[in-house]
Length: 120
Image 1 (cartoon, helix red, strand yellow):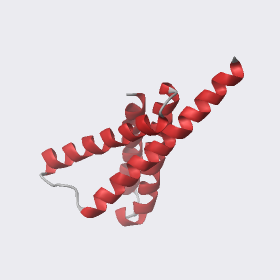
Image 2: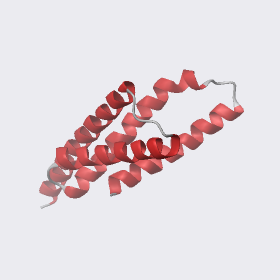
Image 3: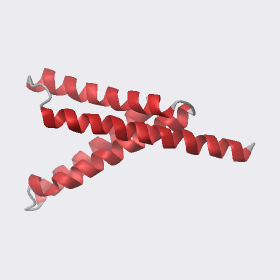
């Protein structure tokens, strides 16, 4: 739950910042596409990292579940709000999001476990 909270809070803050940039500058949305994608990956990695660090075991599983739940919530929002399914490009993105969250979970478990071993 901590990981999902982090991901959605990160997404809201980034959306607010980019919304203000798009509104008050002459920047176009297309020019920010790669920055937004990179920040999405950072947010999912951070969420997986936080989830894995809190759980301290099976980081790949808890990170993967974090990524899958995030993708499911986005899918529900898109399907129920806009009556659209994921297209092939979005399936690829959300698969990568889940894999990135898994990597974050693995790293979170390893760092949390190494820190607890040192303090013992």
